[in-house]
Length: 362
Image 1 (cartoon, helix red, strand yellow):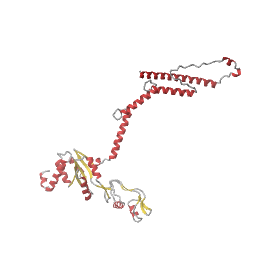
Image 2 (cartoon, one colour):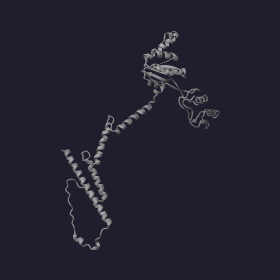
Image 3 (tube, helix red, strand yellow):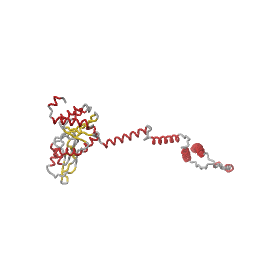
Image 4 (cartoon, helix red, strand yellow):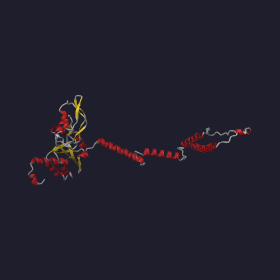
């Protein structure tokens, strides 16, 4: 402070500036709060709640600026807090982080009735439902405030939800009176954190007001989306490697089965697949298949032809097949041929499976 100015400053003011400068130098976190419209009882209660972790001091805006001027060489950028000294400013000092400071001040606030001329912090809504008022002039008073009301069950009832004041609008005297009579306390009494200084940075109060539940939900969604993306693009990581290996194993097995690739891991499935195909085709063709155990030599059944019986047939007993019967016979033979091919594949796979099993046993 220049000497010429110091000579005209009262000693008690110099002492206040000196104490403020010491606090600014001592504490790493400096907040600016607005104490406008804060009743004295609530202020004393909040001071008691915050005592120990936070230190609050209130003085004239001019003296606060002088303290900033004296300490700006030690606290780089602290003088930027001057632009936030609106309303009835006070300084709050702490060693806690800015977010904890904001959360603590927000929790310390309490509901308060609305007063005429105050600015609504958010939309003020009067919900529909019954009231404790008996029918009378109150219905007209509610109508003046823009609230539709009627009589239900001998009591005045509000017919529908009504926004009586929009966020940012001034509260009219009649609306403030009605809200008080209805027991609605839309205002909050407490310290409004305007800005916080930390390590040369200034955080506006609205930046520090974080909805913890919403923040947790966002983190959970980000984690889930990252996990799904990593699995989709097959990105190997500690959290995804188990699923990726399982996915690769299933894909390899599916490819082997679709392309009939002989492998010890899927040979049993290939044999079963061929068997199912053979049985399905045989059922479609109406052919009966007798399963034979492995290692037993197939015995060919004797077919005893009896030409004499054929010769004994007369011309009337011999019938020439129709075209439809011939076509059906041809289709039957084609299906029989397909069944034989499937049987061949089945036996080859079966043989291969036995060879693989014998290799394992050796």
